[in-house]
Image (cartoon, rainbow, N blue to C red):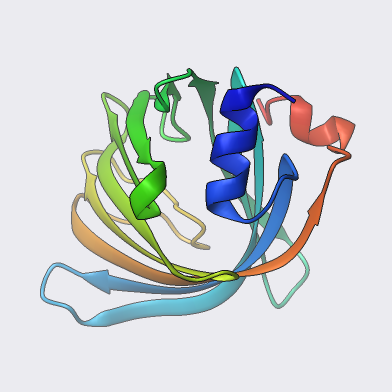
Length: 172
């Protein structure tokens, strides 16, 4: 494990490069009206220079819906890569403050996401989604063009020094 990996992992939730979270998600329209809410699973792999965030929502009828951001992180905690909407993904981890800021630009939807640490095993996140073309974001139906707010509470479920091989490969 490199110094960058140790610093990022220690700041996030311990020394393990692979972490799994339960995500309580609330999706709201531009005016704050609740559209949908659910709990999904987030897998986080941070092993510099690699970083991947994969979300999986299992629907009541058993179908799974996925979303993934994947890229690189450097020694200054800068993140660059591709987002799950087909755009550029970039951001920065502010390790001492327990805050991560990322944005996606140029795909079917642009977004800004900020997450912050609430406790050792709990984080909160706010994502502003600007949908340019209809797109499903962990939703059974595509969201029409417009602005959406996504608020989550992320609970750490497990960590591991072993990263599943499936996580090391992009979904597409």
